[in-house]
Amino acid sequence: MQEAFHILTIYWFLFIYYSLAAMDEMIELFSVINQLQKGALGLFFELNYLVGAFLAGYTAWFCHKFDVPTTTVAANELNFRRMYNWIFFQYCYLFFCVIMIFVVNGIYRRMNNEARGMKKTVGKEIEMEDRRHNYAVNE
Image (cartoon, rainbow, N blue to C red; front, side):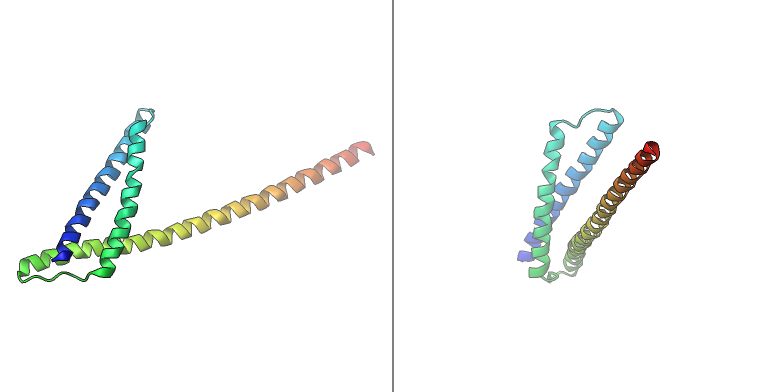
């Protein structure tokens, strides 16, 4: 049962990833409350993003390669089905996050373009007002 090995491995990586993410958030909270730097420990927790990227790839590979595992024991089959469904949820969440990355990226690009346009417009208005002021003073 190769699926069982991969399911258990993915669950261990999920445990490690979510535990480190929770600890990183707690350290961030206490550093903000106490107005301190996270220090070198913060850099360690930044490596958790690599674990998350590996886990996303591993989960995607697993969901494409294997179907829901079947066993002869009904209780085990129900447990494996539930475990597989949670991994499949993580797989669907990956696509949701990728879509949200593109949405947020598009929003920020639009905001930047509008800010650049406003900067140019405001700069031209100030320049025109300076010219008007100079003509009024010189006349």
